[in-house]
Length: 172
View 1: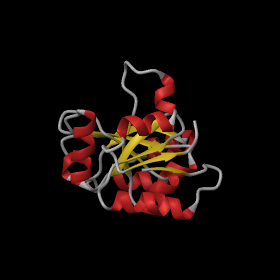
View 2 (view 1 turned 30 degrees about the vertical axis):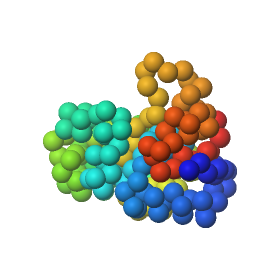
View 3 (view 1 turned 90 degrees about the vertical axis):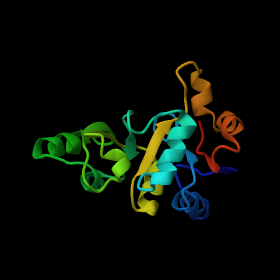
């Protein structure tokens, strides 16, 4: 399914469809502030396993990244020292690598660190806020693919139709 959501004013009904799919353990593709990403509820272990299988990633051996809403949300899922807090406060939105906390499921436990990102995109942040917990995220692009593919929601939908429940068209 492909739905259009405008980043400037996300339609609550369309956002609710995406949130229901996340809560049901489905995979979705959504826009970030860079490229489109495949995401799932980061606390749903089966969904995490699904996304790792789709991307050909071993969750025990690979570094995983989550999308958080803001600084307070980050501190629930990663250990934030005073120095890290000051750094985060000055540099958010953006990506960071932090020590994992005990709130993440055991699929993350073998990892000492987790990638954390707070995007500058209202759709991605709205999904995390509505879900109430982070989204595990992996970019849709492969190293050998062109940039247009990873920023064009219609091309992404063609490639992933039937493999993800939803593609959100948030524009190029």
